[in-house]
Length: 123
Image (cartoon, rainbow, N blue to C red; front, side):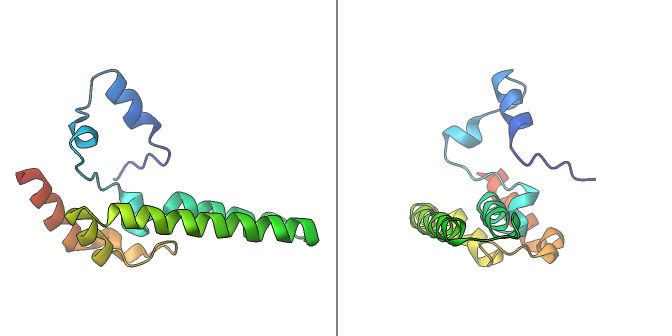
């Protein structure tokens, strides 16, 4: 069974306690967590869902706030994608995981990730 660490806290504690090698972070290698197999930006997708579905009574102020926050998230994600697209492995991942925000659960069982992970291990 897959263990999912949504916030990355367990992984950071392992790195700080030197139980896990942090070379993936230092050398720029991409770590493919199962959450990122669903969609490329799960945290931002969660915030968009939180902003959209957290309240029933929308007034002008809340609606303006939600529009501004979602616009900021979308701009930030596009800038992040531009930076990440410089890495060849991220380009491969973005071809496999096509959705930025909407989860695709079939990607969890994809063989393409196994091939990509093997390719990452050989380097």
